[in-house]
Image (cartoon, rainbow, N blue to C red; front, side, top):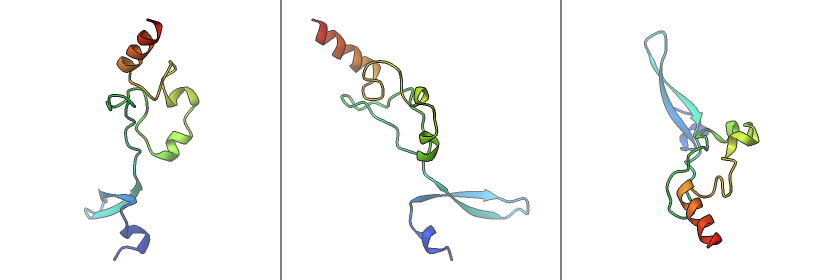
Length: 87
């Protein structure tokens, strides 16, 4: 029987084959959901898809694109927004 902390689905189950040809279950932390554009809902590029701990330890320049609305809007929505403000 798994321990109580392993019964919930907060940790994902990874089946690993050991050198002795047995399958065992390893419990690993889940990755973050992919970030979405605030306007159209498309997946944002340039944001790594890693666990929360790995994301926290990344450099600031690796966490999101260095442009206006980076990490919030996709490039096409950002373009529309900037062009709309100019005109």
